[in-house]
Each structure stands twice: as C-alpha cells, then as structure tokens.
Length: 298
Image (cartoon, rainbow, N blue to C red; front, side):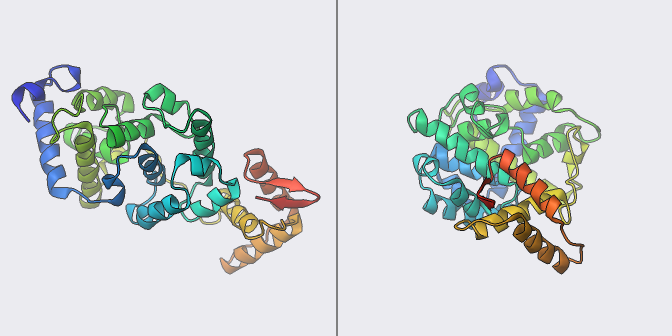
C-alpha cells in the first residue's frame, strides 16, 4: 500500500493513528486469514446466503450447510420458486427461522425484478431481511465495493484498537471510522474492500478468543437470552413438528402432545392445547404455517 493511497482512504486523509491502525489490521489479517468456502465465491447470491447464515452462528456450523443450501437452491431463481416449507426444512439447525422466510421472500422479489441481486445499498436494504451490514457485506465480498460493514468481529477490532478503555461506545461513533478506513475501490488488490474486511473479520475472531470480548463495551451489546425452555425454543419446536407432518398436517392437540413429549425429555412440564394454538396462530401470522380443515400445515 503506497503512501498516497493510504492517506486517501475513505475519500479523505486519515490521521496517523488510523494509518497505523490500518497497517496493523492488514498485517494481522494476513497472518490470521481463514480460507473459508464462501470466500472463494464472488457470486452475489452465494455471498448473500453466507452472510445471512453467519449472523449469530458459528463458522463451523455454516461450513457444510452453506454448500448444502446451494446444492438445493443453486440460484436466486431456484430459491424464489421453492416452497416455503422446503426453505424452512433446509434452514433447520441454523436458528432464527424468520431469517429463512426473509431470504425466501427477498429471493422472490429479486426474481420478479429480473433475477439479479441489486448492487446499490438502498436497493439491497429494501429487500426483506437485508440490513445495512448485510448489504455492505454483499457489496464488499462479491463486488469489491466500499461500505460500512459494521458487524460483531469488525466492531471488536475497532473497540480493541481504538477504544481500549472506553465503555458504552455507540455505533454512531464507530460508523464514520469504519467508513473512513474502508478502501474506496479495488484498485489495490492487496488492500481492497474485500481484503480489508476479511482482515477485520479474522483479526476480530482471533481477539474474541484471546482477550475478554471487546464488543461487550459496545452500547449495542446485548447478552443472548436463554434459549432452553424459552418461547423462541417452543416456536422452533412447533416449526419442526409442522415440517415433520407437512403432507397431512397436524391438529392442535397433536402439536401439544408432541411438544409435551419433548418438554418431558428436558424435565419440563407439558404444553397445553391452548398454548399450542397460540403458538400456531403466532407463526401463522408471520407466514410460517396455515390452517386448512382443522389441520395445520407448514
């Protein structure tokens, strides 16, 4: 990286502190680089799916599932034309079933518009389930375009290096720094948006293993709520029951009985029929299932 390019990153000169920060991140990123399967792709659809799968999910769980997803839904058009139940079935084990439906609905919107994932941020975030970070990830990793990719590992690096003692740091304070440090284009293959954010991700992942997680000092940090025995877990259990009986559907009592059996195995009490009905209606309102002739189906 030459000096002239270095001071012009983010379309404005960088301070000596940020210049030194960038040099360190690129050096550490090269040392810690992870050759992950989705990093070998520049297909916007494939990158998008990896970005959604990796949200609050360990890399080891995604490796294998990403490839399996692409075998089943190789293109955005194939995903758009799939049944919602097939999409939910393929998503099982990755958590947050809402994400699967959002990806499916976004694919339908892309398919209707011609089948090409848009490149502009405002068009990407207009799609279901795609927020600013996911849009920036698609742009950086598939298209080598700049943007503010502020996710957990990236946040970790900025907090560790630039805010070593600070508490309650807001993302609005980090955002201009992330924007300023991102290379403006792909003119330098050793320091383009794609390479830069890979470096941040890999250094951040290493930091989270080696030091007390700096991202806890972010104002937006939220401790994950307990999943076992939670309402979220029961929703996920209902979805699995619906998928297991997708051809013939299930009655409310059958859902209650199957959930109660699973709860008993975990040492918890039974699920009443009225609670099962409430869960089904909640899921139905979100598009996970529907009722026909007294039977509930995914």
